[in-house]
Image 1 (cartoon, rainbow, N blue to C red):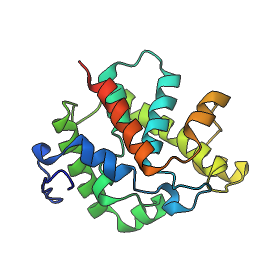
Image 2: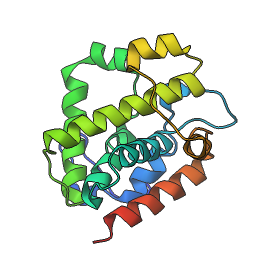
Image 3: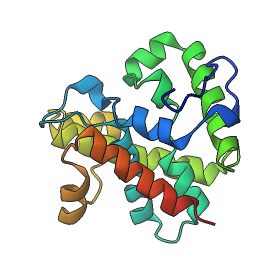
Image 4: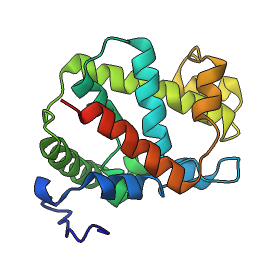
Length: 188
């Protein structure tokens, strides 16, 4: 990692995980295999910020640690990349197991439970689906009917939230905004 840490993908140690490495990596990993409109990729870092904003919109009183878990829901992708769901299904259990070990180490590193409450897992999935619908229709060329088949009903979105999160940012902006949000959520 750029921090100088060496991360064993098969047995990741929580102390080898640095938020700066996560932010840097996620800001450079493209969602939708890079098949999005705009001058910049739509990064996983920007996606995680959108998901956290969508979850916060659904449940404005979520505590800080749960919002941090939501922000970190795809953090393992900082080293293993983002793969489209059909390909993840083809790869199967090996990918899922590696992703799970990384996620567990990330959670331990930042004081989050390895097993999130089922309600939090459901909220993450719902906010992730909402974000995917918006990304698909605003950035990846999906027609609304096609997006509904994959991601369900379109979420309600304010114009301000759409302007804020659905224009791809340069990698440096995505990295800085991820770190800023992480710092805010991880303060006591």
